[in-house]
Amino acid sequence: MRPLNILIVCEHASNVFGGEAMLPLNYFRLLSKTEHHVYLITHERVKASILQLQDIDQDAVFYIPDTAIHRFLFKCSGPFPERVRVVTFGFLIHLVTQFYQWKIARKVIKAKRIDVIHEPAPVSATQPSVLFGLGKPVIIGPMNGGMSFPDGFEYMSGKLEKVLYKCVRVFSNIYNLLIPGKFFADLLLVANQRTRDSLPKFRLGRVVEMVENGVFTVKDAPLVSDKTSEILVLFVGRLVDWKAVDIAIDAVALTHTKVKLVILGDGPERGFLEQHAKQKPNINVQFLGMVPHAEVNAYYDQADIFVLPSLRECGGAVVLEAMSRGLPVIATNWGGPADYITTETGYLIDPLSRDYLVKEFARVIDVLAVNPTLRYDIGMAAIQRIKQHFMWQSKINSMVQHYQEVIQQHAQ
Image (cartoon, rainbow, N blue to C red; front, side, top):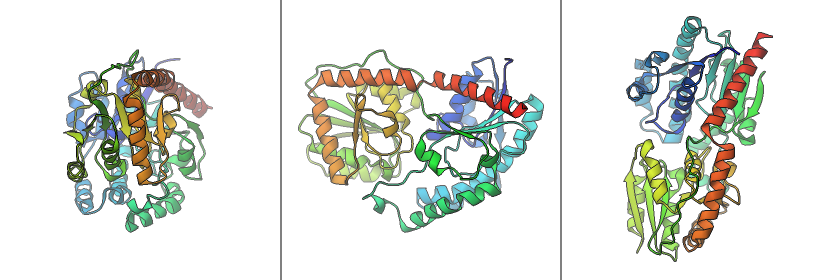
C-alpha cells in the first residue's frame, strides 16, 4: 500500500504541558519517522515548545490562533476549582478551538491530499468533536474517562462539581448529536470498558479497545541493590488533591524501615503537602518540583519503589514509566493503574478508606524494603509486561492498521 497522508488534530501537542498533550505529539513524531506523510494541527500556545524539537518537520505543523475569546474565557475561569473549570470554561475554550480546527483541517485536507484524520486528544469520552463533514475517515482516541471518586471519597467533590458532572453525564448524548463528530466517526478507540460505557449512546462507527498510554524504552533488567541504607520511594505527578500524595506521606511515616520519599512534580497542593510532611516526626520527604520529562528516567533508576495513591486516575502513564524501569509499583486499585498492574507486576490497594490505604501502602513498602529479591522479581515481571503490551512502537503499528482499515471502509 502507498504511503498515507495523515492529519493529527488536537488542541495541545506538547512535551512541556505533559499529560494528554504528550499523546498527539508522540503520534506525530513517531509517524513522521515512518514512510507516511504526517501533518499536525495544534494550538499556537504550544508553538514555542514545538519549535525546540529538532526531529520534526516544522512545515508540517499548522497552528490554531490564540484569539480574544480564548483569553477572555481563560480569564473568567480563574476563580473556579480545577475540575469545575474543566467541564465549564475548559469545555467552551475547546469548542472555540475546534471551530478553528475544522477550518484549518479543511484547507490542509485539500492542500496535502489527506487520507485519514486522527484526533488523539482530548481523551474525554464525552467531549464533543467537530471533525465531521470533511469528506475523509475520522478516528477518535484512544479515549479514557468515566472516572469518579471511590465510595467513601465522594467528599472530595464539591457540590457544584457534583452537579456539573451529573449534567455532563445526562446531556452528553444530546450535545454529541448537536456536535456529531463522535456520531459520524469511523472508529472510536477506548482504553477500557469503563470508557466504552461513557461514550455517547448514538454512534455509527466501530468501537475498539486500545490503551492510550505507552513507553518508548524499557530496561533489560531492574537495578536492585542489597543496600541496608535508606529505601527510596518515588512519586511522580501533579500535586493536586485527587493524586492523594498526603496518603503517601502518611504511609511513609508509618513504615518500620528507613525510607525516603521523593516527590517529583508541582501544583496547587504543594504548599499544603510540604506543611503536612513537616508535621510528621522522623520522616524524610524531599520535594523536587517540576523535572523535564527527558530527565525523569534518572530518578526512576535511583528509586527502589514507586507509589501512586491517586483516587481519580483515568490513565497513569507514570505507572508504565516506572514499570519500564523495573520498579515495583504500589497504586490504588481504581482507574487506570488497575488496567496496567497485575499481581505479578505490582500491588493494587483497594480504596476502602483513607486509613486503610495509608496502612496498606505502609505495609507493602515495608515488605518490599527488606526483600531485594522480591523487588527484582516484580520489577522483571513489570518489564516483560511492558515489552508485551505497552511499547509505543507497537501502538504506532496498530494505529497504522486502523488507518488503513478505515480508509478502505470509507472507499466502499
